[in-house]
Length: 330
Ligand SMILES: Nc1ncnc2c1ncn2[C@@H]1O[C@H](COP(=O)(O)OP(=O)(O)OP(=O)(O)O)[C@@H](O)[C@H]1O
Ligand SMILES: [Mg+2]
Image (cartoon, rainbow, N blue to C red; front, side, top):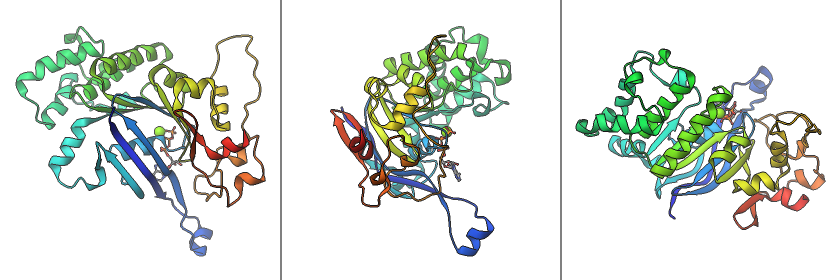
């Protein structure tokens, strides 16, 4: 297997507006949305990115899609640094390889376009052969299980249900046969009843087209269904990375343990023990010494937040990496 995507010590900091006291003291607070992140993704892998709201999942996706520039570090796609893409041709080539499925299907489709126009748009923009348009539309509509295509193609987005629209969003991403698909919470806006259908369509498309996938979610239960590998993020950093089965059944980091415990189990006799996590979502502009999770960690000790502690992932088991702090304290 070859490496498709590589993050090397990538950070993305956003400047945030300052209050009066910060202006007078000369402080310039920054949100560390993605903070010194490194990982590699192999061709054909499906990788879940999980973590609570604000931990940097969407920023990571935007970095991959070249929608924002990293503050530092390098992002390589098929060995090439994407920040060095200079001309339009190279950018088009890059965009042809990568597609994105957004969270909200109502926002991601142009309300003035028919479904057919929506599907034709990427084909025209990326200069596909017009003789193949009809076949490509038929194939992709079958792939996302909207088989009776004429029922949908001449309608406008507002005439379809949320589930049907998200299948169209998926179809628009897949129609150009991308090598890499990033799906950011693709079913979180949908009713539970239609989620399984979309996820099945995504899984089937993945196995027939063999694209590499990043699936972003705050819900470990969904990631389990779609991804063989899971990366857990906390406050912009990766705290655990391993096979999904291992991460869920044998979580090593105290934060992952809390996430696993937070997955609801539909059983009336299920006991509701308190979550093994303290406090609230922390301030993303704070500078940390040592472990970022220490304030909320039931196992923390004085060492955790000491300036001397060296953080970073260690391979606890083959292929299963965890942030050094929890490795020491577990
Ligand atoms: N353009 C921006 N300017 C300033 N701060 C930003 C910007 N975009 C994101 N942030 C901040 O960066 C952090 C990470 O945001 P991001 O959207 O990546 O999180 P997320 O994990 O996708 O959250 P959610 O699960 O709610 O979608 C948050 O603290 C957010 O407020
Ligand atoms: Mg997000």
